[in-house]
Length: 165
Image (cartoon, rainbow, N blue to C red; front, side, top):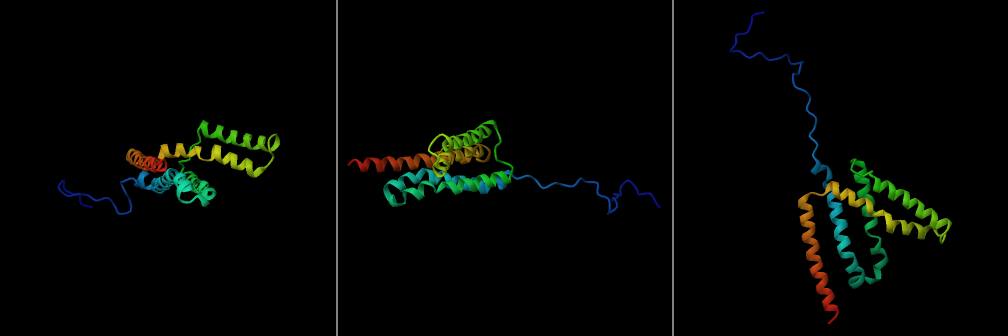
């Protein structure tokens, strides 16, 4: 077999690859886009649901009170499936307190499981979302959220002042 001259390139055999296999790049923005959108929907509902219940749809006050709950459960499920659900001391303590609160409401308190579940929902269901928001939202999301909040509060204060005329 003749030797190659220094000016000629020697290609490795086709069956042997000298490069390591490239793993697909982890794209955090793409992975968390759906969760961010659901968080935005949650926050918009949070900002407008009080006005809807009080001024525009008072007959639907009870269903509007619970409209964010399925949304937060879906956010938790997505965060869990993408390994973004927090498991810190606050969450573990909250789960223990929720269980103890539920058990004490049944054994020592009123004894109604539906009322006890509603109490646990009010006090504990939405807390882990804070930690998911801290992991998922970017700085530009927080700036946009601040703008939306200020603008919505401007409109709320206008409605409040019209109410007193």
